[in-house]
Image (cartoon, rainbow, N blue to C red; front, side, top):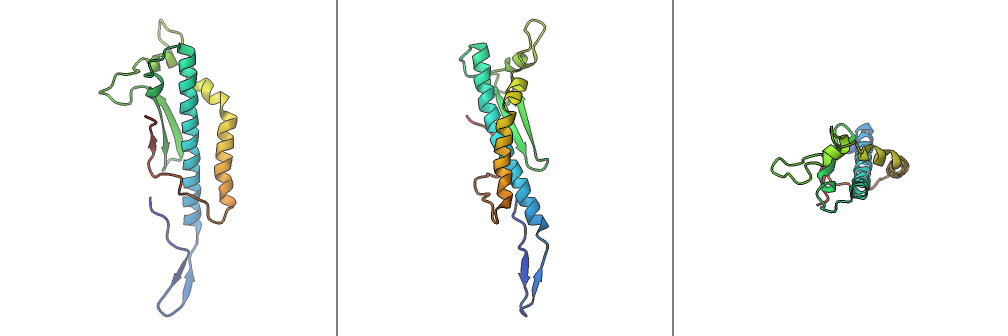
Amino acid sequence: MAVPKSVTKVSKDGSVTFTSNVDAVQYTLRELIRGALRDCGKLLKKQYNNEFYSKLHKRTGKGGKNSSYWARSKACDLQFGVGKRNTSRTDGFYARFYEVGTSKTPKLDILRTTVLNNIAQMQNIQSQYLSALNDDNPDLSGIPEGDIEDDE
């Protein structure tokens, strides 16, 4: 995603024309929101893994790694999922059944409780990012361009 064009343009004869900086502000706002969502995804993934292994007492490392998040740049939202990430891997296949339950296994609902327990922390993360709008030049260098974050 490219940075929007400059606000001022100087022609060869010396005349200066000003253009609207609405595009630059919208770009900055979108990138700050996306950065906040990525940090919220990291927090949720860490808390989900801790909660998953504390409830199941299985230390194989496969179930918690089967969770992932996606901070979409165009839609400006966060998606968090539990399930198979790759069709060739079957590690942690049953992690999603612990989440939603089956006829023989009760629903644990780990993801929902994790999100509800961390709402205050997510609001704090997002408020820190969006408070950077008051700065003249917010620092967007810490926000990578990719959408998917895997902590393997």
